[in-house]
Amino acid sequence: MTLREKKKKTTRLPLVFIGPGLLVLAVLALVPTLFAIGISLQDRELGQADTAWVWLSNYVQLFSDRRFLNSVRVSLVWEVLTVSATMGLAVLLGVLMFQCTTARWRNVLSMLFIVPVLLPRVSAAFVWKFAFHPLFGLLTWPYKAITGEPLDLLASPLTALLTVAFVDVWQWGLFFAVIVLKLLETLPPQPFEAARMDHAKTWEVYAYVALPMLKAPLVSLCFVKMVESLRAFDLIYVMTRGGPGISTETLDMYAFSQGFIESGRISYASSMAVLMMVASTVAFTYIWKWTRPK
Image (tube, rainbow, N blue to C red; front, side, top):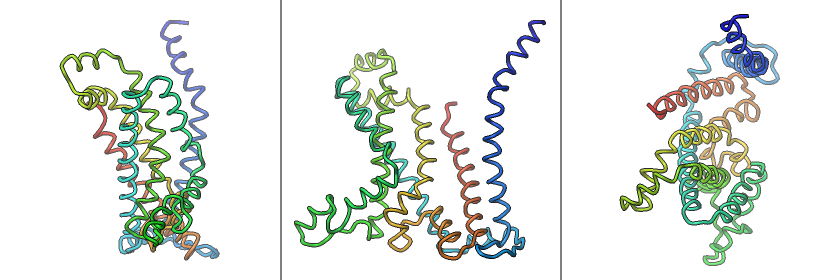
């Protein structure tokens, strides 16, 4: 066997091991996607056997649906709010732990900060919903004791989304702070020492030296949070069920409501899911190309 044949055989070996797993993942991803696209082009409803092909009629109807447009707006606000707040909190806490604590305290704080993300999201939602209860909540009781009036943050359109976003940031911001801390610990000390010798302030050392060195992993963390924020159905559903009114109804909640709760319009709900998938793929691809290192 020649050297070229050995090299060719060696390079095919990873494909032999990875290929079956990739094939299974491709089938599990493509089959439901193609099925959802096919349903979105029909007029299928729950409890009815007869269907007909309406092609793009469901998609055209979406853009004249005010509730759909509201859910898109809420989803965009939710995405920007949770991602930016999570990353900001993670960077701030990560830098503070790296700068102000000893190695022992870093380990203790890291263990405590990991706990929230280990909780099932539904359990965390119920706990925080009770904490924000207008009469018996631990966080709203001081306001009631001082003013004599209950404070219902989840019943106000102005504060409901912010309150639910607080719970999401609490779960993921603390966990990401631990990741940022561990990333800072992997950096070489020489750039920090050189910056301090040039009389750079502490915030300048991190803003212009440390964080630029961590641009790639921080961008990856941001993408992870963006994908995770799209899966916040259970958190929002438990805490507000899309209310008050439709002020916290995201796109996936509206699709679930149309498909299984209110009207049983499976095809209409599938068209929302397909549109959400296409928009997310295009947006993430553009953001990745814009943020990746040149």
